[in-house]
Amino acid sequence: MLDSTEAVAQYIEEIAARTEAVLAAYLDAIPDASSTLLEAIRYSLLGAGKRLRPALVLGTTEMLAGDDAPALPAACAIEMIHTYSLIHDDLPAMDNDDLRRGKPTSHKAFGEATAILAGDALLTMAFDFAATSGNVQVIREIAQAAGVGGMAGGQQLDLESESKRISLPELRRVHAWKTGALIRCSVRCGALLAGAREDTLAALTAYGDRIGLAFQIADDILNVTGTEEQLGKPVGSDATRQKSTYPALVGLERSRELADEAAAAAIAELHDFGPKADRLRAMARFVVERDK
Image (cartoon, rainbow, N blue to C red; front, side, top):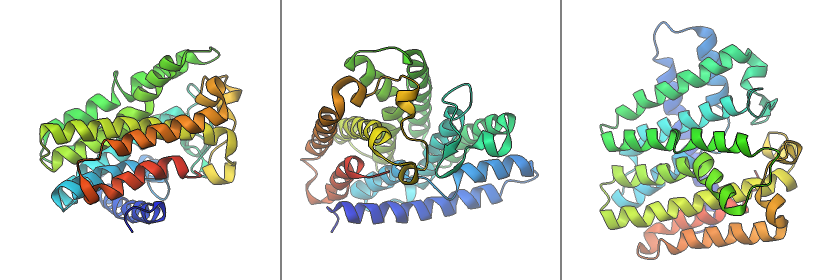
């Protein structure tokens, strides 16, 4: 059934396999590149990751157009940008993490300089890949979601909030930029590539905003309640760095309530789409029910 979280988990695994095959072929086709740099890129990009963002891109396009093939370049580009952000977030100057996706972080495996260059290369290659979609608006969507008013700006706000107790609205702004912008972009790109009308795009944008919020609250909760084996990265790191998180500000019980409320709000935005949106509804539940 499309509306079960188990089916969504299987769907995301299928998307992961498809996305990875396309990404691997793209890397294999690059001529005369540094073997060390390509190895570092493959190390972080392939073989792990939830691939939720590609699933949102492809699932949205399939829902609206019946065929997700036109959205594959955007899905792969967004995954490249997401991976670059993880490489850079893990650096000693940022979050200084030693473990990511169950293995040593890029800078631990290849050194800081190569890790930085791998992130840089993934960011720029993402736009090369996105350009093959032939849709300038999609390229701009991705650029804005990754930039100063999106992921990069959100990371800066996150760094500035360490060792401070910020307000809940301020925390929501950090998350909306750092994590939510690329998730919302995934949904919007999928809709744009399906030729969505303005009213459809508005409803799906609101869905993307709310599922992004649900995802980040769930991540904050898992950083407290999860295990290193489940998450593939250190747990309790938010508390160690004295970061303001939802559990730190409102407690675990209220955080779970807020995550559920955000997922329900995301689902409510799909009321006009009927049964064809069942997969997107299940994705909203999946992001708060997952254990990694």
